[in-house]
Every structure is written in C-alpha cells, then in structure tokens.
Image (cartoon, rainbow, N blue to C red):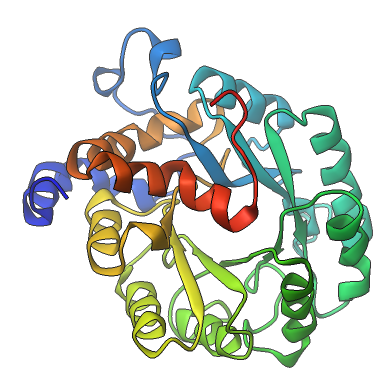
Length: 306
C-alpha cells in the first residue's frame, strides 16, 4: 500500500464527512470533478456490486438514471436488486419475492451486457423456493437481504434457507449492514454467517452511516477464527475507513459498491474522491482486487469490455 492511512485521513477528512449523508438535494462542488466527464475512470475496470432498480419515494432509482450513470462513468458491470421488494408501504411497491425478482429479470435481460441480477429475499413472508428459479434458470448471481427494510433479524432462523440456497448454487449473499444491536447489526450477520461458513457474505456499507469499526471487527474475527466468510463493501463509507479495511483485512476482502443510484442523476460523482484515494494509496493489484477482481471471483462474472 502506498502512503499511510493517517495521511489520507488528514487530507480527505473535510471532504468525506458528507459522504454518509443522504444526498437527494446535495450538489457536490464541480471543482472536485473533471471537466470532461466522459473521461472519468476510462482507464479503470470497475464492477459495482451494489445497485438498484425500482421505486423509493424521494430517490431517483429509475433504470434510465442508472444506465446513464454507468455509461458516463465507464462502469463495466453493475449488480442490481429490486428495492420494491422492501416492505415499506407508501415508499416502495412492497412486492412479493416473485414479482420483485421478475422485474429484475426483465431489466437484466434487456441490458445483459452491463447488468446482473441479485435476488431480493423476504424471509418473513417468502420462501427460498421462490428465489431458486432465478438462480438456477436465469443467471442471478447472488441473494440480497435487507433486515431493516424487511423487518427481520439477520440471524433469524428463517434466513438459513436462503443461505443454504446460496451454498447450493455457489453464490454470495449480500446483507445491508447497520448499527450494532439493530436487525442488520454486524454481530447478527456474523452469527448467521457462522452457521454457513462456506457462503461468501458481504456487508454492504460496512455499517450504514458509520462508524465502520464494528463491521471491520467482525470481519477480522472471522478471518482469524476461520468460522465465517465475511467481506466488506464500500457504499457510503469514507475513504479512510475503506483504506483501513483493505490494510487490516487484505484487498481480497473489500469490494467496490456504490448503492446506485442513491445520489441521483450524478450518483458516481460522490465516489470520485473514494476511487481516486484507492487508486493513489493502493498498489495496482490491490486496487484491481477491490474494484473488480473480487467481484469476478465471488460472483463468477466477467466485466464486459475489459
């Protein structure tokens, strides 16, 4: 790794404080971004393992917005799940597992060069049997679980069937991770991961909103004890925290994801600071691991156009 994390923290501290805040009405300073936007990341290979379709009141998650962002920022591949599978009446469509994932399938089929599907799970009112055809027959590359938006504890026994499905089809499970003690607390994700130690389990956000140390701690413990297969993802995480995770866990344990298009029409502008910090502070191999190689290995995919 080039440089020291403390230097990055000092240099970027003032910039990254805003990355954990919802940005529906936030307009980043144009001085931070290249004038020729289409040149952004043109020399990088990037897979975004965390993107959405669907509707969420107050956010622009239209497929058109996502595709425009992917094109403008040269993202090679994005993994999508349908947020309308979230049980948030009045904010989402609150679709059952079959309906939610059929919409994902339609979107992926229409954009197969740049999108892959993650099957949205609803353990309280769904069944792994509903998701199996999407993994078996339609090329979905993982299972998405959101304990907060679907009102279940990450270590609820009803989650086990979904992780058994992941084991059967050799795909990862991705969990929204949140504050310790919540339904999506890292300690609960670690608990269910220990029951399925061969399944790669990725903690989106490294704890949404931070602090990120609880996620880092359980991932480190899992590596030391060899009792679970945990990974961390970068969406809404500040650059010093991501660099610390790479430094302490190794670059094979951290994957780039952005929660597209949480930030709307200019979503990926909010990640320029992070990506450039990683590019400057990591050696080329570690940077490649985080930005696309880990995704290729875990999800068994290949970024188109590389």
